[in-house]
Image (cartoon, rainbow over all chains, first blue to last red):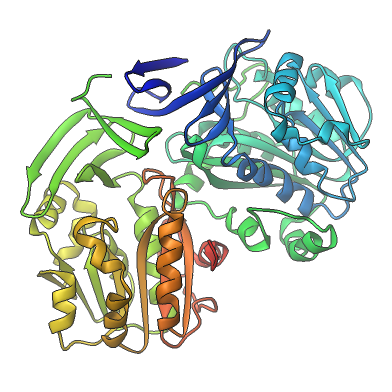
Length: 305
Length: 267
């Protein structure tokens, strides 16, 4: 953490390249330390409320984590006609699991996260995120490597959600965004399936990760829909890639309204109209996505900003 | 973080942004306000007025497309448009993409127009369009005195404190209602969805019933406080929701789906 203190207290500084910084005043530190995989800070900020930093980047904040998690989970589950089995890879805070379990037709939700210490710290210091999700009889938590899980197990899913940190060169997630991995994901989906991946910033000039994910998924899936939403605590528009197996996006979105009411979904931020409006990208961003490279095991993409 | 090489804007007492001034281009004090332009490696040229980010080259289009196009589409076929404020030329540029006959822009501060012409040519080229008529005057005074009647009025003002606070009153909205045609439409920027909720709610409750159909809507503006900006739209006849949108207009980002997905009445 690059923190700064002045006579008004301690400020956590998050740098964005070397010409932009965001500074938040810290009211209380709940936890600050390292797991085997990453640096973890759980703090109370004056404006954002309780906030998780991973490797000095804001990961989620109480003020608007629901916007991120609703945007990650519900479009994927809503374009699937009957999602019964859902797999989450990553998602250590437990809020992705919480959102998945809001769908009453989900019978089983498996979450695989490599960082057991992070999962425990989140349960202990920020229980609002999982909000009892781990106690739901439909939920199963596995601490382990998602790659090994995908390769070794055979169980199939209707929806798979990738809620991982960006592929940093020495980070644990580099090989979870490659063509080879996505091929395995495709095979672990049922005949009709949906895959969704959080894909980093969605702003012109800094959407290389989103672009790579978009182009890589296109080599494997029938249809890939990129979308974005502004996340205040990231101070940025955030990107997602929705990939479909034997489903047609335009057919499925006609059902959104109906499915939201049939599944009795109580959403704060999204409805049928706002889900569709997330798929509108600026001309510049669309052009940038088309320039994405394909990430492979022999030449994986690293995020460097 | 050295004081002079970084621009800082506090969005709340416990949160601020800092942009590096990679190059300071201008800093002047006009009759009305302090105006600064600097270059930032990421955002490009940045215009600051009285210590607040007004626009950056990189994200201005989100704001200008959102404030300009909805009222022009809610009105079926606008010919005469008034912009109050908007001295940087960005809103004018968007309005001129429509088949309008005349656009009057009333900006109180000539220096803002001059700075736009010097540093933001991609916005300020709109000033030289034959249909544009630039008036340097106080917006309210102009509107009280004018005999012109407009199809659309766009209020592209600064924050609702200081000199612009009079632009956020029901008196001003009644005046605009009187100076618009019978199917007139008004749009205005109202503030941050995150930081100014209470103010916007109070304002909207106050003025919405002056019009047949009114709503708030949201748009993205990454460099404004909170990143999600709120606009108001007020129509004397047509519904602000059932809009006939021309998707052939060459916009960078904004479209019908974004507008319809962003409408909300309660805050």
